[in-house]
Length: 379
Image (cartoon, rainbow, N blue to C red; front, side):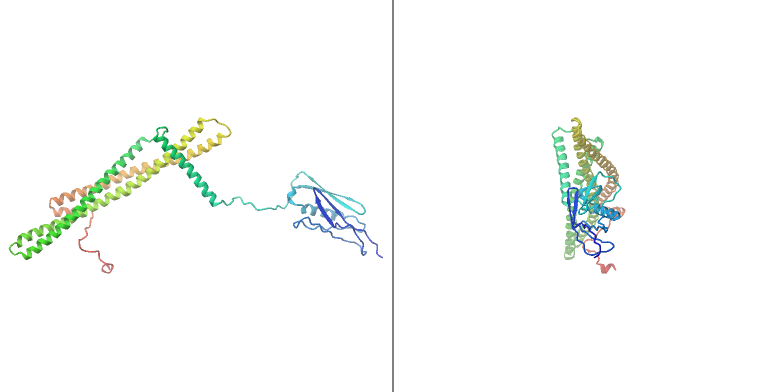
């Protein structure tokens, strides 16, 4: 028989509070220079196994005991929050007992972290973003509506730039007058077109009678030539009037309208500025404590933001009004000269002067009854 050694493998481990106990029963089988018995302890599927080496006389080796203590520390769940662990062993002939003592965090040790990964920039919910936009829009609309009603009832104050407001009022008044001129010029063009069309038909009728009435051949012929000449001059005048209408229409419905659109944006910015200015003034008149100071600071930021927007829009309106005035004078000067010269030459019967006026303004007349050439003819 070989000499036997009584060993104590840790066959069962359990964790209760901060105390871990292991009990084992051992039977001897064969003799050898060293017996190694492995004991597996598994608290959860995540914990690793522990292997303990025992000498022939039943005592734990120092190096293996140190490795066991280290592995046991690493096998503890992270959630226990143990930073420093001290393991002591109390031995007897047939039992081994381990005690884990936890102390305050000393630092300098790396622990494996577990749990969900948290991103620095979390993805926002699109629905929440839309809801936030709707909330801000509703709040802004409420403030602006309250400001407008307050101004109309005479209870609220409004910011006024006297010089700029006067220029805007003049622009709106001029736009109405230009629209009236445009409407009358279009009426004149329609009536002139009908008259030219009638004169052309009348000239054709006189020419036909001139051929069929021998005794009145000359008289019908004179009138036919006169009506055809008037129709031709009328078409020339009609071309000048239509060019005048197109230029004024561009000025009124595009250039001036674009400036007035900027004016509307300026007025909206002014209302927002006054609304947030009123809110800030009301908060400043109230008490200042821990609850109101954050509101005052936020209101001050919103007020400053809308003030910058208001100043920017006021500057944009001033620049556009300046450029509009220069462009308007230049355009209307040329168009009024054209209109005057064309009307004067037509009623004076000066066909040469009428044609010269159209050449001066680079106006090309479309020959009546002649369609534009096809793309095959242009090749």
